[in-house]
Length: 55
Length: 239
Image (cartoon, rainbow over the protein chains, first blue to last red):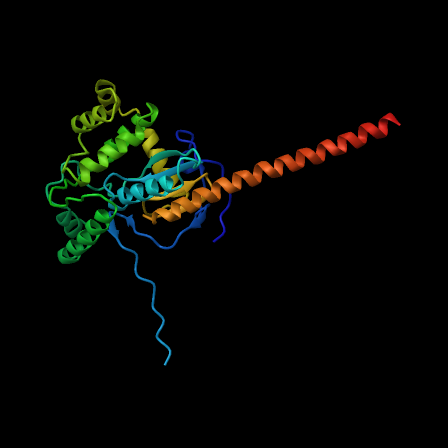
C-alpha cells in the first residue's frame, strides 16, 4: 500500500484525538504479516493460504 | 533515524519485537545510523483490574471467552518464540494487571532520559520474574533500578502528571489506525506492524537512511540550480 508521508512523531506534541480526523494507516507498511496483540489477545497471524498443487 | 514504537508492557509480541528491533539495529554494525527510539503508550487490555486475581489463562478464558485449551496452546507458542529471541517467558508466574500506571512511569522515564532502561526492566519483571507492574510502589522500585529517582517517580505517579501524555499516545494510535501492537514508525514514514524479524527492521532503517541521503542530494541539486541561475542573472546585468 502507498502511505502518505508525515513528519516525525514528536512525543508530547500530539493533538487531542478529537482534533485529528481518523486515518487509515498514513505510513508505507513494510514487512509481511507478523504477530501482534489485538484487544488483549496475542496470537500468531493466520498462515497464508496454500494454493492446491497442480496435478 | 527516529523509531516510534506503540507498545504495551503486557504485550508478549512487544517484548519479542523489541529484541528483534535491537538485533536488527545491531546487525547494521558500529557504522550504522544513529537511532532515537521512543516508546508510546498503548493499553492492550484496559478492562483489566490492577489487582486481577488469576492467571493469564483465566483472564483470556473468562474475560475474552476463549477456550482454555486454546489459550494454553497460544501461550506455549508465544513462550517458544520468545525463547528463540533469548527471552524467558514465565506465564506460570505472570501477574496480569492494568498497565496504565506503567505507561505513566515510561513517560516519566522518557522525560528523564531513561525510557529504554525502564521499558526493559518492566518487560523483564512482567514476563520473566512474575513482577507486578500495575502498582505504584512496585513501579517506583523498578524505576529506581532503571536509574530514576524513586521519590520523583512516586510523586509523578501519584499526581498523574503523565496521564494526559499516555492518553495522547493512545489517541494518536487511533488516528493512525493502529489496532494492534507492537507498531513501529520509522522516520515518521514507514510503518512496521508486529514482531517482525530482525532483518525487516535493519532493512527499513537502511531505507530511511537512503531516503534522507536522497533528500539531501535533491536539496543540493536545487541549490546548485538556483546558484547557476543567479550567476547567469548577475552576468547578464553586468553586460
